[in-house]
Image 1: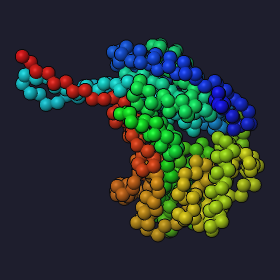
Image 2: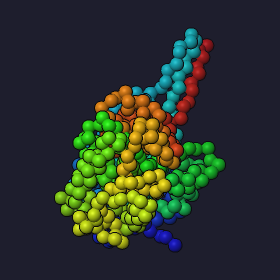
Image 3: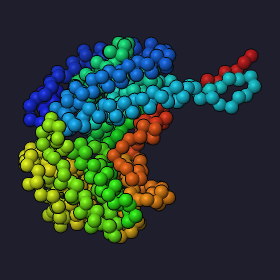
Image 4: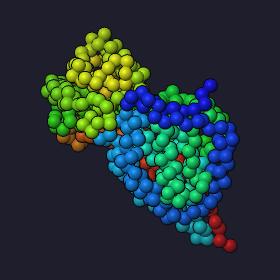
Length: 463
């Protein structure tokens, strides 16, 4: 029986962190404290809530380097990148949501009628349970935690086993910021305990980032309760490179979009469709740039491709590659070019495959690895059909010099976000959402407050 959570570092296989699972008494105390703090935090003026969140973000900025090294040990991203999760994306998202909170949490005024005052107030939903993943542990969680607190909710955070210490960093940041007790808490839980927590009437909303299987488990746990869950469940994000694309720019950005974080991103580029007129030079440039990566110990500053999170994940990707090759695909990267590459280890060399098609899992099932399939297409119609031929729909990108063409293609794509000449990025001013098996709900932007509040109408008649 599991009684503790362990973070096994992909760097060297050691136990980097271990924490006991919360007991029933600890879970009950957390729920009771969150419930007790609700009214007090709801009644705290918004400007005070914003200032506390600003101080918490400042804590993260002040400790970015040590948090970055800690993150490298936990999930294997090269240390040359990890602190930027805090100083760039985390700060950008938190700052944006704080900057728009006053406007987007204000009462909604309606047409005046003599003798009446009518408006809609945005009440906090209550206690928000955030279930955060390991691959971008701060970027994914900040999407909900900061807006939830700004809206007047209390928050419970359960982080992935692989990134246990991230939850503790949040607690330290909010303690340093002077957040009142009970408003934010973190708990170490098993999957069964998460289900028990969701079933409790004191939990008002669930925000989950993870697998489709995990999303279905969350839906099941909600059961007959009248609450909702925001589910961000990954993707198989496509790119279409038109004949008029800026070739060098497209190659540079798509290589990065496919291999950054070892491809372990829900919005990583996982399949590429290239106009047949430029297919050969595109592939040649893509392969050449891929060979420049250095795979190795992520604690070494010159390494820009670290291990995958665990050996099983790397073996899953190797299986996809083997299946594709057995069905006619051609791999273009010799793993021998990457001395750190080892079978039966999390250290996986990047791989590029051509002569691929949609009979191969590589082109239809999420890889979550530094592996990419590239297909030649003869028309825009074919590209759109292939891009939509997926059970996922998180992001899609179009690489072209023609803005109108990109917008017209985007209108036909079944996706939450359509990019032109960029990828693998969340603009906090835009809604982050997915369709199909990429989940449901929305974070970030003005719309990101909607699920974290409930409307209350005031219909007041003067006598």
